[in-house]
Length: 377
Image (cartoon, rainbow, N blue to C red; front, side, top):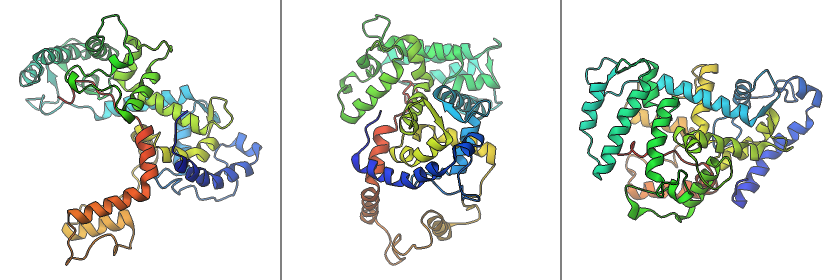
């Protein structure tokens, strides 16, 4: 389970009640035949289910149908995770291309020579770390170059440059390099402290850093599949690929929606729980995956604002109306009263006061991104 601030829990439960009554009112026959059945004919399914996101009941039904197999009325954790992983890989393939700073001749292909030229420009301290990451990039290149032509093109570019590696060879190379620098006593397994050890700035390493320590402990437990309190090479691959963060999100979503404890989630259970799921922020790490699926199924939606033809004050006014509604008097000072840093700080404080519970819950429960060591250098 997860810890949720008391006020947030009470507010979310109150938000659940209308949906809970709706589900209880549904006939079991209708629910079994059609998981979309929601009781009243013609019910509006296009309203946001919480104030945190734009997820609607219809959107949730689309995601449920895409994730479920064989038109089943319930989702297992394994199905949900497999759906997220496949979608993320598809996204990585679509978005990956030749980085312009590496693709020196701009031909859309990365050669071994271009990789070597780029690596020579890298300046990282200490020198041992620079040597390691240069070798790592060369090893990743060779693993991604499946046809051995010393060039990367097509899917090979995604193998090399995906932020969450999914190519087995590239993932093995990356994990081997990262595992070796963390395995301080060279016993072939990592303790929690070793996993998070900052080998570049060891003087800044603090394993007892408040909320960050709690988050790291949660990730460690998510990685430790066999429960032996150590992370093996195989388990660490889930960290380097980012899969552990998807697993944690799925576990926390099921903690909130699996009302009958059968380790499965029906559409109705997800719908009732969604305000709490949004409120606690447990789905933040997979929001981009949801958006990608909905875009493909529904096509571009007219939810955003076409601002391409606007400039200056007109653009600012249109953005404000789109985000905040028509009542702008209290949001922006007049032209005679330009907003300054102090005014901006007051507005930010007022927002934080109003949304403090949701923000705190999201920060505590959302999890983070994997740090592969060399990407921030």
